[in-house]
Length: 190
Image (cartoon, helix red, strand yellow):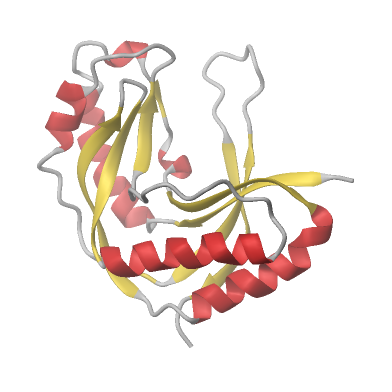
């Protein structure tokens, strides 16, 4: 039986990603930037629920349940805002705006996957973030997060829930990045 590596996400519009790209370009000038693996703007997304490898036979029910989750959640204002880090391993840009709605959509996406039969890990506290860079070994990401602290992107409306397939990079290929492909997307609201 084949499976797909999937996650539910909200994708920022290209204009918001371009705006963030300018701020991220300045980070490349900071000491230690060359040691980080930077994520391409095409890979920026707010992961709502990581589903892992999902068996193909579960997809029809998953589509129905994620569609319901999307339709029960009204569109909400959003913007890319600030930055932070997870330990010394990941640097990210945060979110502002309709965070309660974003958290609710994350809860609904997680529940939809679980009810569709996807074995889901226990939910952790949801921290909306776009991963910008990763480090193979613990690194001092403080200066990078601090430099992003004042970033406040243009407002946009989150109006869609996306189910995204991730294609992991080939081991040993320098600079290779995961590729992401939207499998399905549902408009928010009725």
